[in-house]
Length: 385
Image 1 (cartoon, one colour):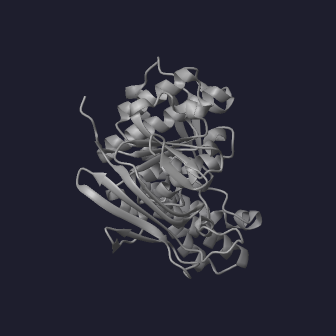
Image 2 (cartoon, rainbow, N blue to C red):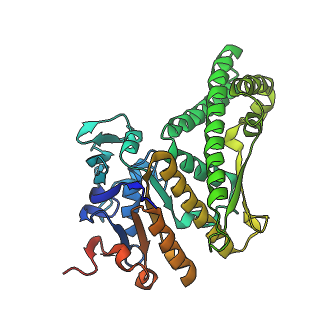
Image 3 (cartoon, rainbow, N blue to C red):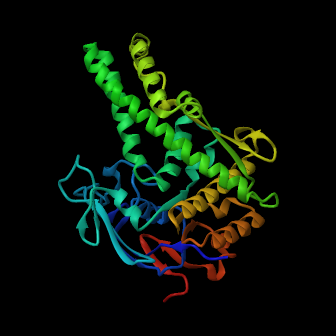
C-alpha cells in the first residue's frame, strides 16, 4: 500500500509560552513521545503545536493565558511559537504569537516570514488532529462539548469553517442584543438574514464532514479492532431539513421562523432554534448502543476509534496525513489496546506527538518515536547526554 504524503513538525521554538521562557526542540520528521511528571510542561508543547491551526488550540484557552509570567506574576503578555514543517514541497516556517502591548488584538501569523491573514493559511502546510483527557467525558457531557468537538473535526478538513462558526456566534449575540433592546424590526431583519445564511452554512459543513466520516468508517470497519466503529449523526432542525431540501429553501424557512419567534426568544433572552443547539449523537455500531450508555472503557475506545477515523479522513480529503497530538492517551489503555493504537498510528503514516507520565506506557513505541524527557521546563532526548 502506498504511504500517504505527510507533513511533520521538525523543529519547534517557543518564547514566553506557558511554562517555557525559551525552548528550541529539534525532533526530526519522526514521531515524538514526551515523558515526564505531571506539571512538567508536556501538554504545553502539544498546545503550542495546536496553535498552528485555526481556533484557540487544544485547551481553548484565552489568548492572555498563553503568555508566561514569572514567579511574581509579572509578564508583558507576549508569546511566540515558531515551527519548521517539512512536507512534499520542502520546508515551511510557520509562526504565530502576540507582541508586547497588543492586548485585545488577534495573534499575528506568518508563513516563511511573511504576514498572512490568520492561522487558516497554515493549512496549506499542516493539518492537525488531537485527543486530550478533557474529551474523556465527551459522550456523557453537555451537547456544547460535542458541538465543539465536531467543529474541530470539520475545521481539520475545511479551514474556512472557523470563520463561519465565529460569524454565527457573533450574529446570534447581535440578534439577542437587538431583541433585548427592542430595536426596530428592520435591524432584526438584517441580522436575521445574515444569521440564517451562516447557520445553514455551518449546519451544511457539519453534515458534509460527518457524511464523509460515516462512509469512511463503514468502508474500513474492522470487527476485530479493539477500537469499535462508531455510528455518528447530527440532531438538529436545520441538519434534518438540509437532508431533504436545498440550502436556499432551508435558509428562507429558517429566516421566517426567526422572525415569528422574536417574542418567544425575547422572553427567553436567547435564540431557541439553530445549529448552536444541535447535538452530535454517537452509537457503538456493533452493539447498537448509545455511546453515553457504554462502559467507561468502551467510551474511551470509541473516542480513540473516532479520532483515528477522522485522521484517515483528513488524509483522504487533503492528500496528506495530519500531525496527530495525543495527550495522555496511552496510559489509559490496557496493553492490548495500547499496542493496537501504536499499530494504527503506524498505518496512518502520520507524525504523532504523544505525552505520558509513565515511561512504561511507551515501552511499545520502540523505534516508532523519539522519546524526550520533560522536567522543570527542560526537554532532552531520553538517550541523549
